[in-house]
Amino acid sequence: MSSNKLSKLVIASRESLLALWQARHIQAKTRALYPALDVSILGMTTTGDQILDTPLAKIGGKGLFVKELEVAMQEGRADIAVHSMKDVPMNLPEGFTLAAIGEREDPRDALVSNDYKQLADLPAGAVVGTSSLRRQALLKAHYPHLVIAPLRGNVQTRLRKLDEGQYAAIVLAAAGLKRLDLSERIASTLAPSESLPAAGQGAIGIECLADRVDLIELMAPLNHPDTAACVSAERAMSRRLAGSCQTPLGGYAQILNGQLSLSGFVADLEGKRFVQATFTGSPVDAEKIGVALAEELLAQGAGKILAELGVLV
Image 1 (tube, one colour):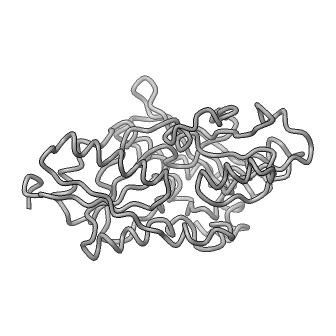
Image 2 (image 1 turned 90 degrees about the vertical axis):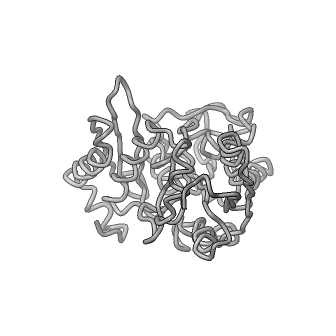
Image 3 (image 1 turned 30 degrees about the vertical axis):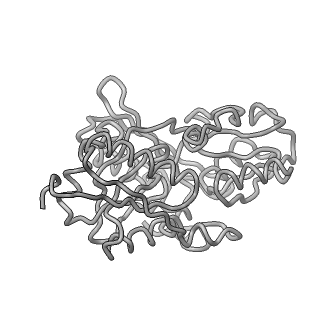
């Protein structure tokens, strides 16, 4: 079936404000491309949205945010699903593919605080909230005098917990705050040299069944080649290192002067042992660059750190 035979398209999305923003963004872009197409959104609550009192690493990881959406596609209730790429497991289930990766928003982490402008301003013992082992390791490495506490929930819930005084500061993805018109909440953005982003951070992915050639063709114009190459390199690195939300690692690629430069790190939970490296090459070799960087990190001792976390690579 070719794409011009489709009369309607159903987008599966989580029901958080940020997820719905992303789904509506893709809905608007798709309608602009195909004015005759009826594009609707199927909002869903996922397991990851329901279990809010336990760190993600302990309940099964990021796949909890996408599983229900994938079931909806398998059952024919939805055609595509829209995700934050940093929430998409490094290995998609058999039968699924990424049809497109949209242009990246700001990939950096952001400090949000009502009292402090920079992380360096926080006094000893100040409580900083984050849901991410990656951010936890980086914060402990750079600011050992701070207390890092778990923080779950959607963006609005996290901001409310900060405003209630449960935390002196929290660290969130800048992209989500900007997309929700909450840029004024950002006290400062953290340079990648200080807080290397998660693989795929700031990018939106469109997933569909791998055999839906019509949908892959339909979504092709929404793919942003530079972002797709960078995210592909980041995910290849993370995949080789068995990356998940149980793993304190980061990967961030940029295309500069026609070359793809990928930086990555692996750390222990306390940020005391830290290996990092950078690899550069042609964007067409994005996946190879990701694997090569992972091998370099393993050569530096990343495997031992991961093994102690129970992660086998």
